[in-house]
Structure formats: C-alpha cells, structure tokens
Length: 385
Image (cartoon, rainbow, N blue to C red; front, side, top):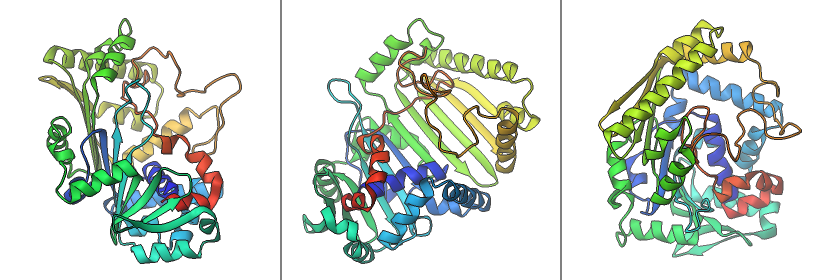
C-alpha cells in the first residue's frame, strides 16, 4: 500500500497532470476537505510533456533519486506506472477536532494493470513475504502489511483504492449505493459542480471553519490579511500547445475577493520590479498572469505557450542559480535552519498560505509525512498497497 501512495506522490512530482473520468469521482465518499485528480494518460499524450517526464526520470535515475523507487515498484508489481497507470483521484479529510493535520486519506488508481498480475508479482517477492499478506476484505482482494493501518483494495481488476479500513468501507458503501458520496456532500458537491473536472489537472479545497478562523487570526495585521476571508480554492490546469491555469479563491463577500485580488496585484507588481533583470521569456510569463474579482471570488489565470514556459524556467534557473545546487539534486537543509522556500513557524502570512505567493498549502498526510521512511523500508512497504 505504501508504495502505491509513494507512486501517487511520484506521479504528482513528475507530472503537472490532467483530467479524470467522472466514474472515479462517483466512488469518493463525503467528508473530505480536498479532492484532486490526475490523468496520467492524457499528460503523456502531449509530446512536450512526455519528453519532459522522460528527462526528469533520466536525471532522477542518474542521481539515485525517486525514479529508482519507481523502477523497483514496476519490477515488483509487474507493471509500468507511466504506461499502465491511467488515472488517479485523491481525497484528503479536514483537520482533526484539535486542529491537527489529518493523518489519513484516500487514493483511487485506475489503469491497464490487472489484479491477477499484481498479486502474482507480490507473491513472488521475497520482501513482501516477510510481513505482507493478500487476503479477502468484503469479498474483494486486499493487499496488507503487518502493523500498517492502510491497505490496498481492488474495487475491480483495473481499479485499486488505497486507504485505511474506515475510508475503504465508505468507498464500498458509496459504490453499493448505501451511502451518499462526495457529489452529494453540501459543500464539496457544490465545488465539484464549479471546478473544471474535464480539465487536465484539477483540485477543489473547502476550508473548514476552524481552519478559516486560524487563517484569519494569523493573517491579521500582515500584508496578507485579505486571505483571512478565503473559504475555498478551485484549480484547473489544461495542457496542450499552451499551458492554461485557472485558480479561484472563494470568499464570504465581493469586497473580500476584491481585497485578495488587490493583494495579488501588488505582489505581482513587486516581483516584476524586483526581477527587472530576469530573462525576457520569464517576464513574458509573468505578463501572461491575469487577476480579477468577480462577485465573492478572486480569480488568477494564465495562458502561455508550453515551450516558452520551459524556456523561461530554464532562463530563470541560469540567471538565478540556487545556492543549494542544481535542480533535481537531492538537497539537505542548510546548517542553521531552513533554506529558501522552507516553511517557517511565523513567516508573515496566514496559516496555510505561503507568504511567497499567497497560494494555499496543504498539510502532509501521514503517508506523505513518512514516505522517506517507507522508501528506506524497501519492498516490505509494498505489502501495504
């Protein structure tokens, strides 16, 4: 199970991603704070994206990075994730009653892989035999690891859900029509109607009242105070010849949305002034960003030629090299504290908002937080798939 969670993280890392079939959304239970979707097949159908992914994989392999774990996974499960994995949908619950970040979540994978092939691959794997087991759960094939709460459950020969028993039982109840799903949830259902689910990559986040209150308190008196009124975030990304991005920040009233748009306008202007020496391609990308407020929603948009975007990214990397090393190289935290871009307890922006760009961030799930540990565990992590 853990390796499939690792796989989802790797796919997000490698691919700026695209759309999802509606039937996977219909399997999601209610009660989530955030839903995201990736269509791997559609991403790799774009030649420039396929080339970019191949280059990233090659660089990662050369550096002994994430691609090695992906290769190990492919050998163990006898399928090639970048060929056989087609769609991924992710659901994250809200913070706990004490405000702590969630430690669980749900992922559903669909592809051209087959249950029988994956099971056969695991049964031959010596590491899996140590603490992994394959058993039946509600009549379906489950892949478990001893002592791990999360496990993988085949909903169909080509569909695998990963989560703890509570979430997986909810999925089965929704699938059987015994429980309402995310589409019927009063809050998330409304967001799913508004977000562009036929876009490439998309996501919807409904901030719970407790998190909204925390953000408002932390943002008060800062340049990002306007974000204290934010209650929801929608994002959609389409990719072809052009990269098209749309982010919608929902608030309580039009005045709040207007203040967020003004804050972002000021931030963008500051970046342009401070980056006066940046390459022309990079400046062209910044000029492609649009900001506006419509009713209670602040909208950020961008449409730029994908090849030009790649050129601008390369130009920025050359003009402003990272003091920590080249892109894609494993980096440790510099002595004395976090490096540039690292999260800080009091960075001047509201909780859940990056002061650098005003973009909402999500707390890591338990699976994400301990992914490094699980990579080190080796193939035994596959038992929890």
